[in-house]
Image 1 (cartoon, each protein chain N blue to C red):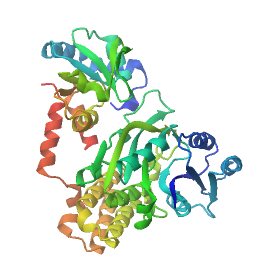
Image 2 (image 1 turned 90 degrees about the horizontal axis):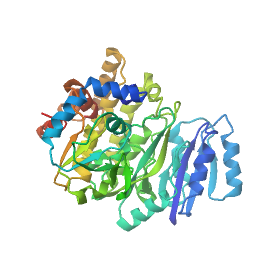
Image 3 (image 1 turned 135 degrees about the vertical axis):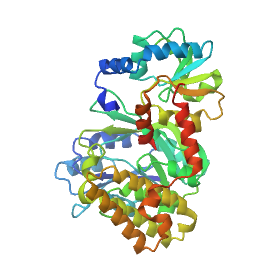
Image 4 (image 1 turned 120 degrees about the vertical axis):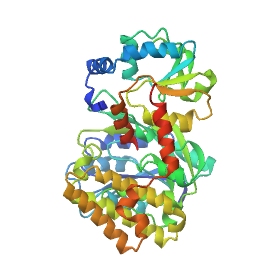
Amino acid sequence: MQKGLISIIIPVYNAGKFIERCLQSLLGQTYSNIEILCVDDCSHDNSCELINEFVKKDNRVKLFQNKENSGPATTRNVGLDNANGEFIMFCDNDDEYKPTMCEVMVNTLIKEDVDLGICRSEIFNLDLDIGAYNYTNKIPLERQILNQDNRVAINVFVWNKIYKKELIDKYAIRFPDGLMGEDTAFIIMYCAVAKSVFGIIEPLYNFILRPNSATNTIGKFNSGNRLFDRIKIIEYVYDFLIENDLFDTQEQYFKEMAKLELDYISGFAKSKNVAWKIKKTYNNFVKRKKLNWKKYNYSAIRCLFSFARVKESIKLFKKCVWI
Amino acid sequence: MTNKEFKSKDDYIKYLKKINFKKHLKKIEKILKDKKIVIYGAGIFFEIIQENYDLSNLNIIAISDRKFSESGANEKIFGYPVCALADIAKLSPDYVLVGTIKFIKIIQDLESQHLKDVNCIIKPLINKPFFELLKEFWSCA
């Protein structure tokens, strides 16, 4: 592990149109002690040729190629396995970093002595002139010790954050191979072991929203059998917490995140049959792991609420009306 | 209506007529008389509001937005001074009115983080119909 080095991992798949701009934004960083790990997942365009041009010009750029198409989880894991840096960051192959992103993120992590740094992002919507409210802007601000409340508030994108490799290696945190929603699992696992966070108010990441990007075609990825990946994610995270003796301390966080995942996928269930199947698959997980049925069955977890939360919701609702 | 349904300025104008913003504006002019107001949200929605409605009876002291990194009387937007989010407290406003169509998450954000130590009331600039508000609220929950 090289001290001060940031390893930036870029999963690459048919990124020919955008990868040059992405790499230029990384090579133009004000903080130069970086290595850029491009991991190609068997693209069938000219992504690798374009990346190799950068490899020839700058030895900070490295290219790894998967032997078979494996999905973003395995691809990012290849990056983690080959990273030499003290810090890890991610970038999607069609997005960009603002010039000071690495400098601000790494300096903040070191100066504030935290385990996780989060920045805001700017959305560039190539479809519409009208921008969307950027929900990556809701982050715990300034330095905070992580607790049950603010852990849940951390969004599950991997690319607006900086991580300590030492923590990732200590707990062998990896993306679950072959599953969609892999970033959610990574963030939950990392946040479960991180003690503190610093939220940077400045938007440092340019998130480019394209018509065919994974985010914009998210419905496609959350249909059919892919829906059930999310339940496997819940199970993957549960196994991680148990193996690392973290379940007792992180149980509430796990329940909240399980609820969010189930709420999320239930929104994509196009029929009662699918909705029933989601419920059954999740309940089978609860039985298999011998979790407390009263606390963890599907209905119980989706009704997860407290009177305090209801009171808070009513208070917020009243603020939003003019009486 | 979601943001996706607003494809042009006319759509926003129609929406404002639909929610009878003119009537609501007259009402809040009386409620907020002589109160210092900061508008949060310098996007297209507020741009259309200030183009199509007379806001002169509201004592708007500044416009703020997350994209403003600095404040200054020299910097103006729509004729109002610009204020960075972090500097709202210095202005000691009585009200911060959120000038966006979807405002629940923003109000929550401002209350819990940026303006939690500021003694002001945060409300939306518009008055949404009850069921539309409930729908937005449900989508945020």
